[in-house]
Image (cartoon, rainbow, N blue to C red; front, side, top):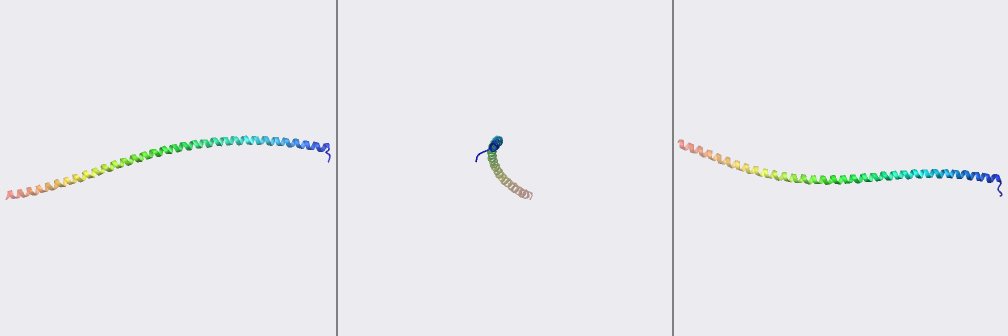
Length: 123
């Protein structure tokens, strides 16, 4: 089939329109890619920020854990010392009570003896 000049012009015009549309689409695609790159870059920055924050929080948590362990050990030593002192105090109290009752028994004995001696001397 032979092409007529009208068919040829339509074809060229159609191709020019198509190329213009294609150029426009490519331009839009470039803009979209650029926006996506920007978004990815922002997301990467956000992820880096979150990672840095998470590392800082983990470091703080580890430090807090160490401080808590040190306090726990300190409290355990303090409790042990208080238990030791309490036991010493209890022992001292038992010994004091024993001495008190021994002295009380001696005073009662001396009082009875004194009462007997007074009774014998009055007779």
